[in-house]
Image (cartoon, rainbow, N blue to C red):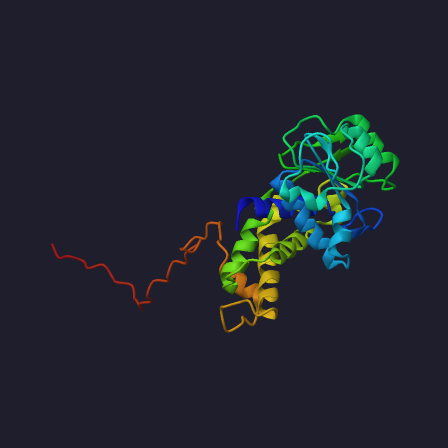
Length: 287
């Protein structure tokens, strides 16, 4: 399991928000990637698997993903540059276009994914263009880097950070506890969906696509439980017998980072033993 594999999962979830305003499914979006390297292709491949799970064929899913590299739109008959082998599955039969804003207006995506080190590509003109051909009243955004709060008028928004810390702990815990020997991409789809289901309406109202980091332990526990259920259903688990209560089983193996004192906070002083006594008269000494 590599870092890039975990990273592409949360980026896949970034481009497939859990409760999009128009109620679109993953397979109903049109995706435009800025960047067409191996990391971007990996993200696209997992997004395709998510669309296949919703009923699209492999080619139908790939047709909904467009990519842009340093030479412009990824097309079969491109003039500048050549296609790498891993890019060919996403190259389109289309005339070459180099200007990114022109590509956005041509493709009309509902999701933009930045998978490139190129800065400043998502200009105000690009974002305004996105608003013209998308009906959603809410624009959902996430970044790989942490950002502070954004104040817009009388509203304050808190952009979520697409951090693979949402994925790693739960996946590792579920895989280890089930004894899974081969980790399929479906495992990461399970993790991705679980993270999305942990996003509340309040989180979305604040502009965050992710649950708060304060809830990451609960989120990791749910990911591990869902992976365990899948592993035993598909008979890819090697740890038997199957736990009767998945949540209890997972929680018993989670690291508790809270300090638990080994001594009681208060002590009850024991009562002294009871002795029956009588007053002693003073002895008068003779002169």
